[in-house]
Length: 137
Image (cartoon, rainbow, N blue to C red; front, side, top):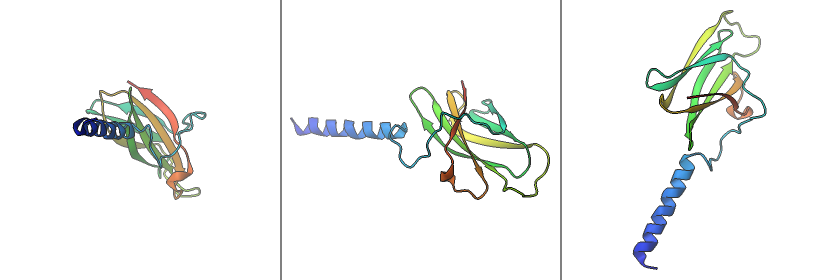
C-alpha cells in the first residue's frame, strides 16, 4: 500500500471518528436518558420565530431556574438538554406562575427533541436522568 493511500485512509478514519463523536453516538460522561418515565414538570412551549428554538416554561412559583445544558446533533434531529431547578423545600417563594425562558443554539429550521432534568436547588447535576419532554418540527 502506498504512503499516500495510507495517509488518506488514516485521515478518513480520523474524520469519521470525529464525526461520530460529534453526533453523540459515543459520548462519555453524559447523564442517562430515562425513556420509561416521561417529563412531568412545568408546562412549556417552543418558539421558533427568532431564528433559534426558544423553550419557555411556566413554573408554578417563584424560585425556579432553568438552564440550557447542551445540544446534540443527530442524523434526523437535534436533541436539546435542559435542567430545571426547583426552589429548596420550605423556602419563601412568590405564589404565582413564573416564566422561564431558555434560549438554545439550535436553528429554528431543525427538528428537535427536548430532554429535561429536574433538580432541587443544591442537588448535584448528576443526581437525576433526563426525561423526554417533547418533539417539535
